[in-house]
Amino acid sequence: MITIDLSGKVILITGALGSIAEHMVRRLTEAGATLVLTDIKSAEEASEKLRGWRIPCSSYVYIPADITDSSQVNRVVGTAFQKFPQMDTVIGHAGGCGLHPFASTSEDEYERIFRFNYFAQTYLARSVLAEWMKRNIAGHLIFTSSYVARMPHTQIPSYSSAKAALENLARSLALEYALTGIRVNVVSPGNVAAGSSLKVFDEDPAYREFVLRVSLGRRNSPESIADTFVFLCSPLAVEINGQILSPDYGAGIGNRL
Ligand SMILES: NC(=O)c1ccc[n+]([C@@H]2O[C@H](COP(=O)([O-])OP(=O)(O)OC[C@H]3O[C@@H](n4cnc5c(N)ncnc54)[C@H](O)[C@@H]3O)[C@@H](O)[C@H]2O)c1
Image (cartoon, rainbow, N blue to C red; front, side, top):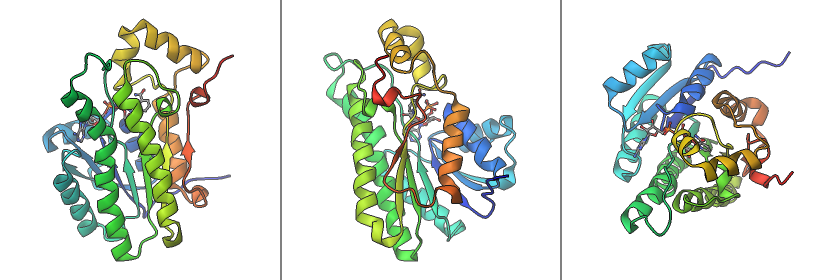
């Protein structure tokens, strides 16, 4: 029997109070990991939410922060390493968007979406990689992307471009840090029946038709996305580097069946 035991492992997750994150937090905690959770929501909201998810207080630390502000990201990372000097896994999971057609989206809004989905991840990477280099830790950085990085859809150009840039960043960093033992991978889900895409799926028939066509009528479950993270964080995945793992029913390859 194969079991996944993450006890002793400390994992930082951004955007940790979101819909997919709920299942990641549950599964990673069940596997024994200790979690450093960060999100823009207040500490009070976080403890209420995590209590509702039945996550034991002893298995996590929560640090509120806006990840689009690099000084706040540095503060989160610094606090996490102070508490857990051997922390070796970091998941840049925060991201998302609503519909934002190119012509009617202001320059500011376009850049806000891109910053949240791309530049915020570079702040996280810069901060964490510096700590791992200083501490000689062969860490594992994982980003959450989306199948639209490879299969763009209308009305989400800033989001899909940011995710495409993120996937390339991950592969570039994997290459740049390969000799240090540091690994960088990506989990790139298909359309998940939860979270930021629910409203768009419900309200936009064209988006709904596109999603169901490329995923052959099936939307991904947040549990399946969470399981991909559990696998990637586990000893079973130690030889995986610079890869895009896609729990997406093949949506990212552009099913045309
Ligand atoms: N839902 C989907 O269909 C889907 C599909 C593919 C990829 N993804 C990706 O999965 C990840 C999670 O998506 P989700 O749908 O669960 O999102 P969600 O909207 O449920 O959660 C996002 C979380 O990010 C937090 N957040 C927002 N702005 C922030 C900021 N500036 N700083 C820190 N935290 C902030 C929110 O408070 C929220 O808890 C994202 O990267 C998203 O792009 C989602």
